[in-house]
Image (tube, rainbow, N blue to C red; front, top):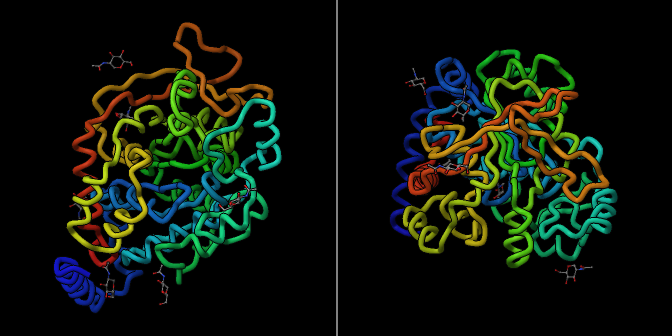
Length: 383
Ligand SMILES: *[C@@H]1O[C@H](CO)[C@@H](O)[C@H](O)[C@H]1NC(C)=O
Ligand SMILES: *[C@@H]1O[C@H](CO)[C@@H](O)[C@H](O)[C@H]1NC(C)=O
Ligand SMILES: *[C@@H]1O[C@H](CO)[C@@H](O)[C@H](O)[C@H]1NC(C)=O
Ligand SMILES: *[C@@H]1O[C@H](CO)[C@@H](O)[C@H](O)[C@H]1NC(C)=O
Ligand SMILES: *[C@@H]1O[C@H](CO)[C@@H](O)[C@H](O)[C@H]1NC(C)=O
Ligand SMILES: *[C@@H]1O[C@H](CO)[C@@H](O)[C@H](O)[C@H]1NC(C)=O
C-alpha cells in the first residue's frame, strides 16, 4: 500500500462513516432513486475481474445505475454475475443490485456452436462455448461449456463475493424497471443479448417504453481483417457477443426501441498501453489496482467505448445509420453477424430497425474519462 493509497483510503472511509451514520445504504439508494432527473441505466454484461469500468463511468457521469444484469458470453451468466457482485463489493458499491441472467442463449448451446465451427471454421475467441477444460479453470479461468451452474472460484482475483444476487431474474427486473420509469431507462448491453430478447418477448411494451438500447458489438465488413493478420487481429474483429446468441440478438435488435446504437468497429479504436495503466495506478484504490494487474494491454476499451457513447453522446465524432438484420441461418458462415441495408433496398417482408452505428469517438477524452472514473470512483456513500 503506497502513501497516496492510504490517504485516499482514510478520506473515503471518513466520508463513508459520516454518511452511513446518518442513513443506512437502502435509504441512500432510495434517495438517489428519487432524483427523477438523473438519467437511468440498466447495465447487462459478461462481467469479469477487470470489467467494472462501464459502471464506474456511469456513476462518474452522475447516472442512476438501477442495477447490473449478467449474461452468458465470455463465461456463463452465473460466473459473470458473481464477478459483478465481487467487483461492486471491493468498491463499496453493493447498494447496486445484481440480477442473474439466463444461463443459455435462446437456442444456441456449446454443442451446436462447436458443430457450427467444424463446418465454418474456428473463432479465435470462443467465449463461454470454448471446450470445457477443468485444468485451465483451476489455473484461474472462468468456466466454459459443461455445466452452466458451475463456478470457478480460482478466477476471482478481485475476491469471491460475500453478497448475493437480487431475487428477480434479469429479464423480469428489466421489465419491472421500464414499467416503473417509462421512457426513461437506457439499456446497455455489452455481452450477449439473451436477457434483452427475453424481456422483449415477455412484455410487448418493453422495447417501446425503454429509452434506448446501446450494444457493444455489431462489427461490419471485417472479413479481410480476420485473414490479414494474427489470430489476435481476427479476435478483435469477431463478434462473439452476438454470435453466442444469434436468435436473441435478432430479437433484440429488431425490437421497436426508440433508439438503437451499435458500437462495433469503433470499439477497437482506443487501445490500452502499459504507460496508460501505470498512469492510472498513480492513484491507488481497489479499482486502479485491479485494472493495473488484470486489464492488460491486449484489448482495446471495448465495453468502455460503448458505455461512453451512451453516457455522453458528444464523445461521438462520426456516426452513420442503416437498417440492421442479423444472420440467423446456422448454415451460414456469418451466423450471428449483422447485415446492413439502405432505405431504398431494405427487406419488405420483415420490419427491421434503423440503427445508429458510431464510426469514431474522441479517443483522448475517453481515456481521460476512464482514468478519472477509476482513480476517483463513487461509493454508495456518495451516490
Ligand atoms: C439530480 O440529477 C441531476 C442529473 O445528474 C443533477 O444535475 C442534479 O443536481 C441532481 N439533483 C439532486 C437534488 O441531487
Ligand atoms: C469477502 O470476504 C472475504 C473474507 O473477509 C474476503 O477475503 C474477500 O475478499 C471478500 N470478497 C470481496 C469481493 O471483497
Ligand atoms: C469501504 O467501506 C469500508 C468500511 O466503511 C472502508 O473501510 C473502506 O475504506 C471503503 N472502501 C472504499 C474503496 O471506499
Ligand atoms: C487444458 O488446459 C491446460 C492448461 O492451460 C492445457 O495445458 C491443456 O492443453 C488444455 N487441454 C486441452 C484439451 O486443450
Ligand atoms: C440516439 O442515441 C445516440 C447515441 O446515444 C444519440 O447520439 C442520438 O442523439 C439519439 N437519438 C435520438 C433521436 O434520441
Ligand atoms: C464518417 O464515416 C463515414 C462512413 O465510414 C465516412 O464515409 C466519412 O468520411 C466519415 N466522416 C468523417 C468526417 O470522418
